Image 1 (cartoon, rainbow, N blue to C red):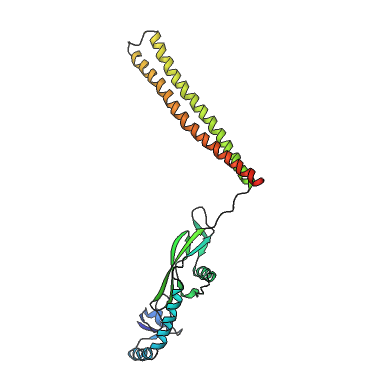
Image 2: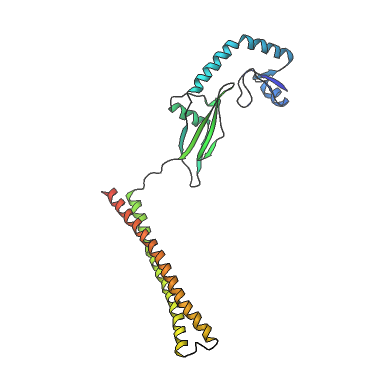
Length: 254
């Protein structure tokens, strides 16, 4: 059914707009609450006459709306909120918060003319501010995580101790792996030497076993060298981090 709106209804239309709505919505809500009337031929004729007479007033209201909208040129909101590790906010950023943030900038906006979905995660979003018919502003709203407080010196020291313990554990594991790698390599070389000493290197299957032992020996030694180099670098980096942490903790204590 067609309804003539008697006031602005965000998401539906503005005062004096003729809109199509479901019969139940019109008869059970808009008409009983005085927010609209049935758009009969006579009502439309009266509306046209009213608009003709009110043209100057409407133009003045639109000019005022455009002036207010101009206040938001280049304005972007950055709102800090408490968030979880996954970036989800504790609570949501809604139109009331947007209105409060604008007020802090000296721009008074009624939250009722702001539309947006409640924001529940960090990121950049958009709010729409409806000043007047055909006068709307898209406002960027960026939600960021609140800055976490700097850790206290005691917490830094505790972290450094954990890093040191981890470094020592890495050393122990590294030495244990290197130990087994070299044992396997040594066993391969010993097996090769035994076959050579017994002059079995030309006899099957010892010929194959000797070649396998020699290859195993040199292969494990080569692998051990690469493995050692990588992990030594890793441990060295851990030590550097630990030293920096200790220095920072001492400076805070001082």
